[in-house]
Image 1 (cartoon, rainbow, N blue to C red):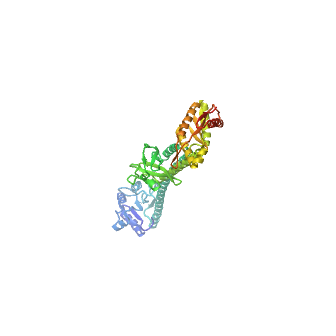
Image 2 (cartoon, rainbow, N blue to C red; image 1 turned 120 degrees about the vertical axis):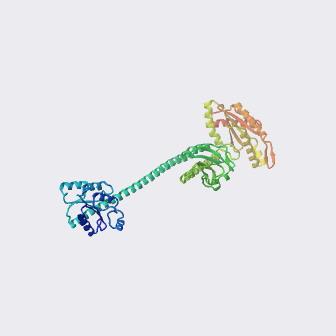
Image 3 (tube, helix red, strand yellow; image 1 turned 90 degrees about the vertical axis):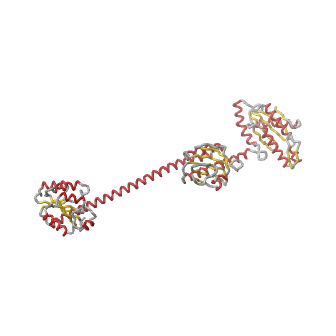
Length: 502
C-alpha cells in the first residue's frame, strides 16, 4: 500500500540515525514503529503492537505486520543480514519488503549478498529524505502489486475450486441422468417386447408367463402378483406371482382393495393406510387393470421402501398394457367362438368340422388310426315344427345339443351341420366303435323329453348314418357322402335307427 496508513518498521541500533529516519517517515505520513536491535525487530514481527508509542494507533493497525522494513546492516547483537534471512525464512513475514541501509557495509559483495538473502533495495547512509521516500513508495507499489496479484490468484483459485466443484456436481448429475436414461431405455425395450408378446398370446396362461417374466425385469427384486376377476366377478384370484411365494388359493373381494374401490393406483407405505387383502410391513402398489371401461384385474407390487413416482408411472403403464391384452384376448376368443359355434345349440359349426378334419386326418395317417363320422338327422322335424311351433323346434334342437355334448369325449367334435342335421367326428374310433356310439346317442334321443310351455313333447327320434376314415374315404366330402347315404337308408328302413355306410 502507498497511502498514509502504510506501516514502516525502522531497525537501527544508532539512536540518532534511527531518529532521523523515523522523523522523515512520520513527516511523510507513515505509521512508524522502531526496533533498536535485530532481536527486537523479530519480536515485533510476532507482536506488531510492540514498539508503537500510541496504543490506539496499535488498535487501528488491527495488529498487522509492517508493510515495509528499513533495516540497518551494522548492528552488534545480530547484523542486518541475519535479520533479513530470518524475516524471509518466516512464512508470515517473507512477503514484507526489506530496505537495507548501511555506510561501511555498502560494497558490491555485500549488496549482492543482501539481495540474495531477499532484500528488495539497498541505500547508503546518509540517506537523502527524498530518495528514502521515493524508494519506499516504489517498494510499496511493488508490494501492493504483489498483494494484488496474490489476491487475484486467491480469487482465481477460489473460482477454480468453485467451478471445479460445480463441474463435479454437474458431472455427478449427468451421471445420474445417464443412468436414468439407460434405465429408461432398458425399460422401454422391455415394455416394447412385452407389448409385442402380449399381443401374440393366444391364452391367459401365456399372458401370465409373459407378465411374470417382464415385470420381474422392470422391477428387480420386487415381489409381484397378477390377479383376475373370477367368473362371478365378485372376487379376484391369483393368476401368477414372481419374486415371492405364490398364494394361488388366495381369493379376495374388490372391497378389500383401496385401488379397486377408487378405480385408480393406490400406493401405501409402512405405517400408512393399507389394503386389507395383504398384510405387509413394507410399501405396496395396487394398480387396477382397466381397459375399455372394464376392470379386468389387479397388478400388485410389494417392496421394503416406498415406490418413487417414476416406478408408480411404470407400474400404471404395465397394468394398462396387460389389461388391454386381456380384453383383446377375450374379445378374440369371443369372436372365434362366434365363428366356430352354432349360437342356438352351442355346438361347433360346419366350418370348425372342416378345419378339425384336416389336421385329425393327417394325424390319423401318421398313427395308422381310424376316424369315425356320424350324421344325425331328427325324424319328421318339419312335422314337429308345424305341430308345436318354431319355438318348440328350437327347444328340441337345444336339447339335442346337450345330448351330443354329454355323449362325446374331450377329443370328439360335435357339430350342427345345418337345420336339424348334426355331425360327430370321433378321432381314433373304428367302424364298430363309431356304430356303438351312434346307437347310444339314438337311444338317448328317444329318451329325450322336451318341455315347452309346461308340456312334455314326446315322440322324438333320430336316424343316424355311420362312416369311417379311411375305409369309406380320405376326403371329408367323400366321408360325408357315405354317411349321408347310410342316413337315407335308415330313413327308408323306417327311421329311428343306425346304419353303417357300405
